[in-house]
Length: 355
Length: 280
Image (cartoon, rainbow over all chains, first blue to last red; front, top):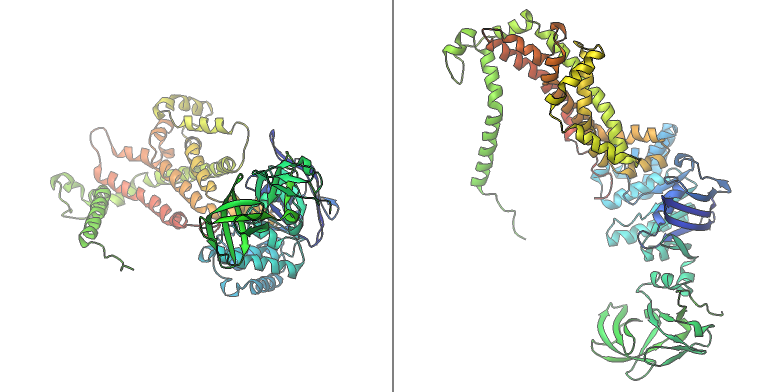
């Protein structure tokens, strides 16, 4: 079990700085998800924790002990790779038991541990197969088996589900969640998929262009994003962001309508208004703050997605629970739920609510 | 769903006919070698270009093995070829791994230089090579051939090995190191077994190249006891006559090690070893 700390960690390749001022404390047993668009440095950060990439500056500690220069093999951390990275010339059992083989663990112990891991992951019948004879999901399981057999201080996952099809991804996501519950180990998980992040994480670290944008629980990020980037990255469908003119008591949207936001401070500095698709009410034509024309309507059964053209603003998206009888071309009234809306200053920083 | 389409029988026949034609085309010279080797000397010219000899004899083979220095040539060739193949593959594997995995200063220049060495006709550099070997006192030694063949084959063998290492995902080494290997252990336990086809191909390539090399062997070796087999073949050519039957018999015998070598390494050549390592 491990408490992991990153202090002012940075990564440079020559003069290019790919990670800056990374400060993060991960508690023992915590499930941390690093999320961000491709190229944001999240995989590099994970590889630095693993010891596969040197740390350019700053300190990396496990249980208070500096691990900067400790070799990967001595960090007692297991990693599941995006590509699975199974040894193609070894069968499933040997793949899973390889770490024990290297550490010269007693054969009997190795066999029983492999059997136990195979049992946990439903691989018992496949232990004598080579990786090439396995399906994608089975390979993924072997890769996880290889990690859990070691009983490491921490687990690292580098986009482990991105090569699986949608149905399998949901299934494996659940398995990873169960695994975390069962083992209670510290886990760091990298993904670009915000659904994985929101469903698995105790805390999410949002990275963009080498900087930590925000660290918080899934709900914190959803309800109180620190800036426009986090607001738009977390939540599906994406938050609508429209330019506004801030006043003392609210904001003026494109059509001159003022949306009163008395519970928000600093409304005068607001340059943009962010509102999630699920926080817009659909009313009859003429009612509400904005008038809009439905462009495309998606009936998903549980939800209805309405892509609208709002007067004076442009395209926006509205999501309502249940089946809403709206057709393409209908004129609607929209009301923005002021209590759920977000305001952003000109640099994208969220203007925090008083509460 | 449409049923699997039956292939056009004409197309199948055509395919096999083309293959058969190619096989005959490729194997005929070998057959001719064997045929002349088995024909009694007296009949080689008198019976003309018959497809089958009217009489078969092993006397040419017996003469070659028991009454000439062929066995010594053969042994010399084996030493030189195996030596060159071993050292070339050893160095090429190291260099190929470095080119494949590491970023270092001067990498591009080194690759370019290695490529340039392949652009000179051998005849151009034979004199300087002779001078170097003579100054080192290595003339008439098998060592000189091993060194020269190794030097000449390293560039191509390095590129060959590099492409094999490129085909082994770096993740596998990372995974091995996470699993507790040192870099060297990761190489030995994970990368090396997966590189066997590449090592086999490189060994085979250098072995055959060295086995059949004539030019340098002719230049650097003049003493009979250090001659390799291609040079030895020339001893069947005398001032006034060519001993065709014995020369062909020696040629047939010389094919044997190459064949054995490829039978031995072919199982490493054909295995698709890395399949299943990563996604796909």
